[in-house]
Length: 101
Image 1: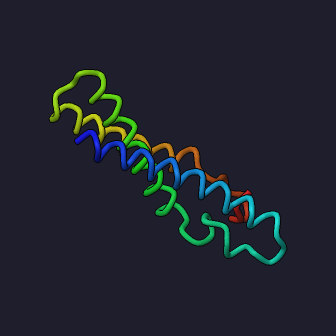
Image 2: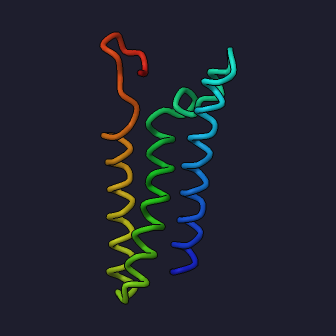
């Protein structure tokens, strides 16, 4: 399972970096709001990226911590759930009128 966790970690980190880069590019170029992944994918996309990164990081940590495969997998699932929770509660703030801040 370690290769699966490693692949998820790489894909999750690449997703986070791509999300940030695309968001910065969308705000830097006029009339390119459709580049912003927050506009395109919203919470669902943010949750997927965070879940993949959390799954990979938690699974790798547990595996290299000496845990057997079942507890390491459960830790990876817990990491994915924590990633989704962090995407929900640490995501984009909303203005009172509903626009993203």
